[in-house]
Image (tube, rainbow, N blue to C red; front, side, top):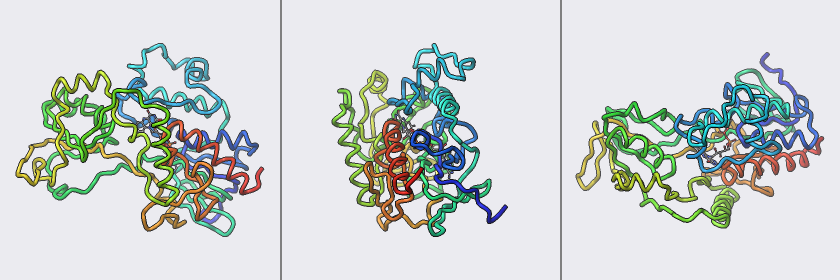
Length: 371
Ligand code: FAD
């Protein structure tokens, strides 16, 4: 009923890689499920954002999915409680990420008996003295700490260009992409210089003509992206969030791998990239040079922002738009140390989410002197 809130010590918001890692470590550190911690997840089923990825994203086209702590991906799929529904001898090129990863997460939640409640969407988190009130679409919770792991998938980002409202074709974002077939025979303008843009451009250019536009000339790398370079990329994002700046993507800074698929796209001529257009017209896009390209659809592969709106009442954001982060792995909010953000900024990758979940769980329990 309105007003009464279920009491627990820690609420984890979101059950993607970051939320599950945090929950695992809360459990390992001795918090009791329910009274000690709960996980609230807006999605109807396990899998975090992976369950919503486009059907053609397979285990061979993702960068790499790191195992959650305590249970290997392979082991979960082959021996876990979901054995009967897992025909996992398929080659990685055919296993959909949106099927395999959710299956793994389901097995993981079961194996560690994590108290995940779903679908429960957190609408608002407010401060009530020493406690936090977590308002959801299914009632309220009262907690002493929050580990926020809501990811980015629900907040697709589309930059503003003049004329966008005039366009009579279809505009969609990576978030809405379900496959190339619906563009057959059309002309599609693909916007964005990241891995998603390349993958979708590859697929769409097989059934339709395309124009590829990016803000900066894309840089392809043919050497494997080394550990040192990866660390450097993560450190740069960590430095930003410690200063309260908005995070940039860590998955994005690794550059574009020069794969056989990319070589083949180049040979087909679909990687002839143009700079960003200056305006959108009723039927296409236009550059200030006067050049205009007709488009039936504009596909914005322009990334995502952190889904943090429900934390707005806590006024954590700086004028620069970011949140000043502190703590060992920069998961703790400086303004309100009872709040941790995991899967945010430097930890927005599967490996980062794992580590952040661990750091957040141990730092938060120390702060709250739990269990
Ligand atoms: P998510 O998996 O997005 O989970 C967030 C969960 O929170 C969801 O279940 C959602 O329903 C829930 N939620 C959101 N808002 C609320 C709310 N208000 N109340 C309750 N619940 C809520 N990383 C890699 O390391 N390797 C890769 O190959 C890779 N490929 C990627 C490909 C794509 C297309 C994208 C978009 C990202 C990729 N990443 C990759 C990044 C990686 O997926 C994430 O950083 C990582 O999985 C961590 O996810 P997360 O737990 O932060 O969030």
